[in-house]
Length: 361
Image (tube, rainbow, N blue to C red; front, side):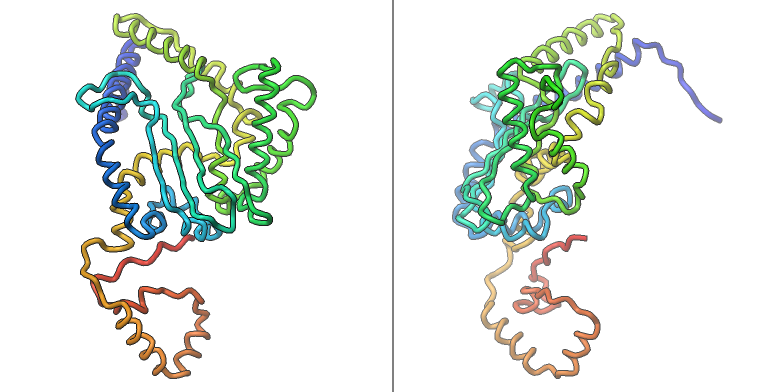
């Protein structure tokens, strides 16, 4: 028997308000957690600084929500990563016991510090995400594209990141000159969104997500929502919540203009990394707090020191004694040229053998 339930509009609003109260509690918990762990993260950073290859090894075992965006062409770059840091920069300083309702904990800043490498001139890449709300109900992370100074012939994004940065910079100039046709920003004139925009849209349409470099993430923007618009939208949201708490019915205006504002042909079509927000959340909420766990999965922190050189010699002697017929058999099977270094150091049955790097599909 099919079951149904008729609910008055006010009941829906009460359930929605209850979910928002759960969200408020989660946000306040995040504020408290952020303050509480400041000193712990400082201790971890000091230990990491004394641990060779900590971040490259940790990223090798990153969860699929992150690993899927790291292409084989990106992997060598991560070998030069010295420091990775996530800061919830809008949280006001102070002891955890004095946590206030101020400061947005979902705004985050990522800092990557690299050794000198063959791909780009920069030693530090920094990307900031602001948690914003617009007047039509959209809530999430927005950012600004970050320029990477690629060395000649080494651009892993095929020029997409440079183009996204160029379009954004032109928009800022036109906005400063008074071209502010709506929250999505449309420059005046036949060119629509400014020089280079249509070229960017055309290139975005040809993107194959599985081939897109991790470093294209630095070009993510999200919708154009200013701090002023977000503050106004938050104020109105709080007013509506107070009215619901008093038992008043609120007209649901969210979504009436949303499709028009955010239809394809607006911000989504010029987004070179559509999953930018999802990747930012995975990095900040999972990977960074649990970095020691991922490092431990790649390089066991509890295993005793092994005689790597002795095992390596034994493995080499064993390989030298294998017959050429076995080698021919391996070649006929179409075996990969990839070498598993762990096999040269550990026996297959060795329980202390660390896991191999996850292979991408």
